[in-house]
Length: 288
Image (cartoon, rainbow, N blue to C red; front, side, top):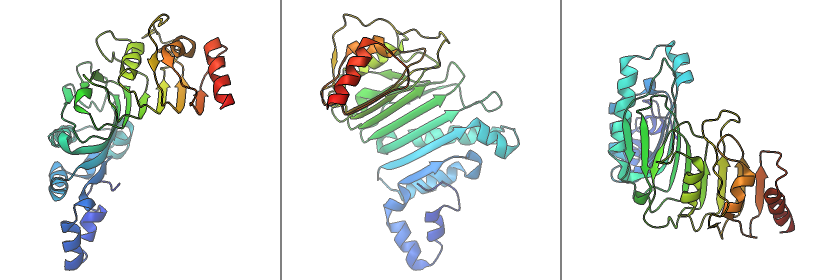
């Protein structure tokens, strides 16, 4: 995936000769994939030009804005131009949500590099196939809200840190991969990670790969509630389960809520649990 800058391959190829230029400019595939890593390496106008050459094709991209990287390359100063570039980048991309295909946002801010304090709505995503959100944004008013009812084509979803979601009206029948990471803020109204996972799994009848990453132990922000007696969530197609316990979730408490099929082929726990439910699951996987 080319890094978006004036020296990116499509721009370079388009200046080799007239024949190459005609080929690059007439082929949308050159312009449907890009990454943005350091916001001082390009301008919003360059992004608009790139997207205009993609025409009406769906786009796949990653935006990685990591405070430590910015501090290193800019001498520790987050200027107004950086902030404007970041805001303009988001605005340009959000205007084209309906064309997103495979998207990865990873934001990690610091005191010197604040990344925003507004609400970002993801609610027009008919072509979205995979979405990764890793959002470490410290401003409490900065919320990313994902409307899963607008993601009918979604096949892979990875969520971590500061996000809010609204649940779909109908099952996400195309979703086969799900990763839920640790959280700093509440994910929805009741504020517990267990309800997020438990309710979300109820909309994933064809899920094949599930990864649950709990937060650091002993931090006490969220406690995993007891799901004993709750109706099991059936996961008939599940093939792999990766589990890391933490402040939010413990394997022995959570496993009884999952209808784990005998078709499960891969199991990994990042904890030394002696819980009976964990032991039974390990035995089942070992038999198949």
